[in-house]
Length: 209
Image 1: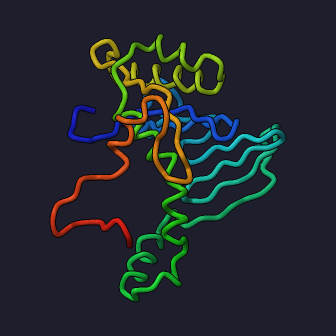
Image 2: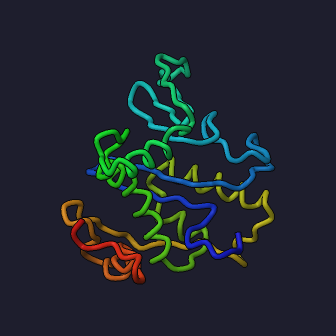
């Protein structure tokens, strides 16, 4: 959408985590040409959340819960959630008590659990315009990434988006140093500009907390 947002409504990244390929995508636009309709995109029977495919089963989760399914689609375990209803209040309560003891998730755990999302956003902001075929060539060895790209193209077309007028943004390959929490090697300089936000007094995040 044409607004002041720094990250896009349609976005996906292909990551290599110690040899394990991971596809992350965000598609929070209607999907009028397909099953999702005006409520958003569908992926293998789910509208949103996390889809983790293993050898003999998959785990499909969202804030409202989810389940584990065998490769025939039969549910073998159910996870329950409250849709995040108590999440914000839990954090506010911890602030009021000036204590992290009651947090459902320790701050560092929350930080680490979102790193891959931030990496994808940084890659977008450090990238450059590219045609769809160039993106296709960059991910051609990963079937699920190609499927995701094709789904996105169809969804964008259903929303009347002309990708020649509003092309994709493609990032160069980035390498992340988990110990030092920064990008290293080729193409890292531009990406590292987005590791930390710019601040203004008195809203300063100190180097040591």
